[in-house]
Length: 310
Image (cartoon, rainbow, N blue to C red; front, side):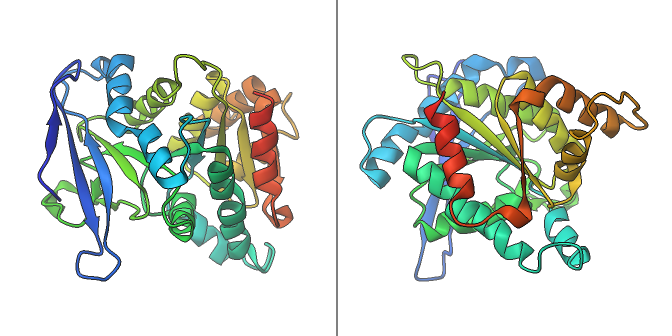
């Protein structure tokens, strides 16, 4: 990492900005901006004012101006939920039940869908930043677009690793940052997973320009775990439309199945109860697309329709 340049106007402690140099020994070197949110004694101090400071430090409007020659600022926010290796495992295990080109269709979800829509609508994409699952596919797609889309990973510094990272493996299993994100926000490693996900939503609200409080938003779910289901629930409570890519396994398929029987209140496990809550509270905001039906510009056109009506 390069030496950190610090901001002195953070509302709690100072927020550090630095960068990661990718492919340091190769010919195609590039840097990603990193915003490091300092440690806090209590989770509740990670409130909206801190997110607003982080949003300013990210300077995403300037990024859009430089990379897309767009001077009108962010026009939309897209969230991608699903960043574990379960997606690839599911496709490998269920290959006989899925479309024979399931992996290619996941790629299409991003190359001609989410990433293309973000470019066309001048939107920012927020993820966990991990190099796995749908987020891994998304990063590769952004590479194909020469990193012109602001792709922001929000995670815990104690959970992740990257080139030049000096953390010891004794801290437990560390997840690699996906190298094709343009920005990362790394929170104090002592925060739990749910606190980090909640901060991601604080950042969604902070990215809205004051003159446009109705900035359109949408979330995409591929596969996903119980922890990521809690993030879907945050979307539902926040009024964010959620697009479920069915046929990718995990919570995406569980939600899609439950949508067919929303009035049955039987819940056997905690995850069953959470799925039911998502379906009952967010029925009008949930859209299901079968992976086998994804081709061409289906996802891109859906985003444009959702954003044009916001």
